Image (cartoon, rainbow, N blue to C red; front, side, top):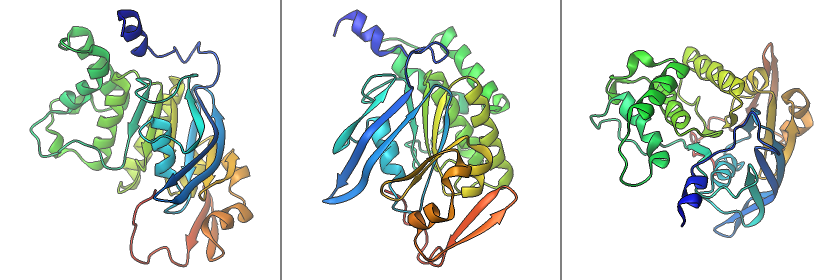
Length: 279
């Protein structure tokens, strides 16, 4: 690979001036182990859009994020991130449910965030003053500057999520994929992550967030994608979360309760056997 191509592979479009959509998904289908997990998924996001991907367990939320990140090729269809295929695209930061960092390892928060500079540095180059300045800026943006030297094993769940989002920011990613970032967090920690996503939107970072909470999706996300192995609805949550569409996603045993912040859907089998994850 030439030096020019290496440099290009480490450059993301400025989202404030990028031409065309940040994310474009065209008729994506995924078959795993002979089973159709996703079918006919199409949508388009502009720079700075904030999308909630919602649906029951097994609806395909995690599979969709893996396709968008480039870690899983679609069986049919295609994905474009600023017009390019997503594989090894440095503009994408994917935060799966299970992150590959051992929280028992003696690392400080700033060390983990600095790992986000790896793709920018390339081989045989050590982090410099500019890289550490980017780390400080990212920690300030997510509100954990005071935790820079804190061992990662001492962080709360919400602080861990902020740390990993800061790592994505120093990568200079312009598309952020988050898989269940609110799971296991208390209400104040959830509110902090949701507020952070709003501030990232002001930076024109495009965020796609898989979650279960319909009320939070309606209250905090301008756009929602309702999945049930296929796209049941895409658009503003108030238009997507209709009774018919929610029942199509969650089944006929669904009970829908209207709350001040939006609908809450409960299935008759919601508590049987626990959460077995989402494909």
